[in-house]
Image 1 (cartoon, rainbow, N blue to C red):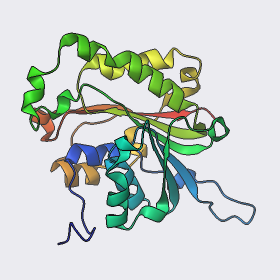
Image 2 (cartoon, helix red, strand yellow):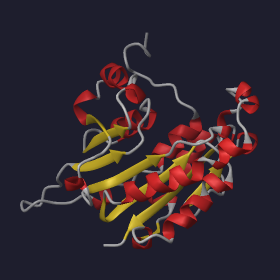
Image 3 (cartoon, rainbow, N blue to C red):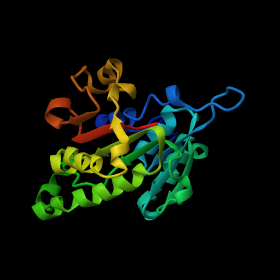
Image 4 (cartoon, one colour):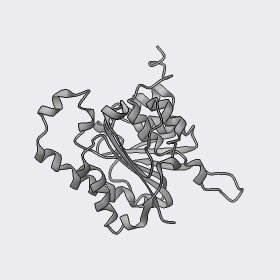
Length: 240
């Protein structure tokens, strides 16, 4: 009953940490002429079924409005129901790509949970190990780089870009970020520590059951080390 009433959402601990990487935004909120903080804007660029959207909307208590986007309404088919169930509908706008150019450089946080090989979820979907081929895994990095490069345009100066996947392959993670930083838009971003989000020792203790040496602006979570699905997350700040 508590799940049906929207009191709780069940998510992997790693997914919760990915959403926490986008925390710490209230410190950078803009203020209007009267000195009051204005409502911020978040773009969930590849929202899919909406797990990160729900986490972010819940954690930020309506202080930010979230635009949840994906390539089609079918990709977001479960999200309207999840938002209604959790009472978060008024905090989220659903849209499909392309997002209007007028929105370039206007968001306080752009979250890119990119399409990937999903090898970090093999413990839940063991049959996937027999379905993926090396060529299929190699097909993802060009797509991920294209998505990340496009998404970065929507980050306002001084704001945050998160790149994340549910896989542990370097070619889909750090190597994509390295290629992104060599692009024209990528040169405008600098590393921003995950601790500037909500990755405090208390959060790690609560979610992982321990504090781990997950420092810097990038981290990879492993099932055998952290008890989560496999994930990668990277946090960047656009130069003001």
